Length: 142
Length: 136
Image (cartoon, rainbow over all chains, first blue to last red; front, side, top):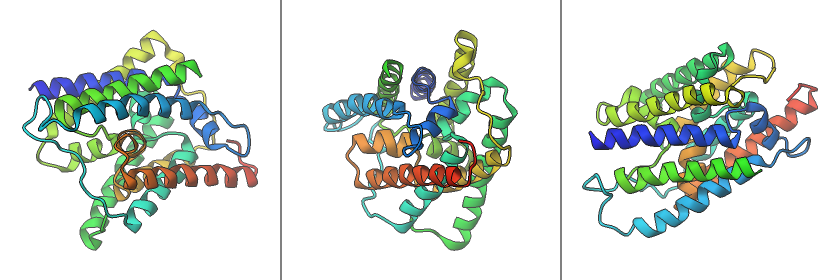
């Protein structure tokens, strides 16, 4: 129960952070990717701010035997670099650049009531379902 | 730039609270995936997604400019982008939050490579769109 409450609060703060940083405005995201055109460096500052804080907190806390509300850590342990990792991320990058949305900001922007955002989110869920079906057949090594 | 940095710090705090209390990565694509397809841990995932959406509603009340959609591009780009983002983030095991923020902070080689891949291909895509005279 307490873990669910923490998750809810995390989602809420995360959304406010995305909004304040400008990452819910797709033109800023595409502006960041427009390196050879009209470059908007905002996203660099967002990432520096977020990574700075998290790097320190991770260094300080990850040596503990467990997190505060769970008996064990649930962090990714896979080290192997696979083609799926790079190709999947590339496909994500293309989609990210096409509309200026990644999953978090898209969900946050649903509140705008924009049909475009809704179409993006529904298509994203469809993309995930397509992945699940192909993964069942092929069994990607992710 | 000040807002960008400030927002980044809030994002860093949010993912840090998740790590310290629940011991988990805040990767939005993975959380959406898990809330749909995993039988275990549905509740914490749905709670987080509800927090995100409610945060969005709060923004739309306090400062509607931040979430209002003023970006005008060709309509075909939304469904195509959505499918690529949905499929790509699952195949690549993460998105901007999971790889770009959480993974890089843990100095994960996988996440650093994934982030280079999606930013690199994002830049390439915008470059190609511009080459074809599409507005970006």
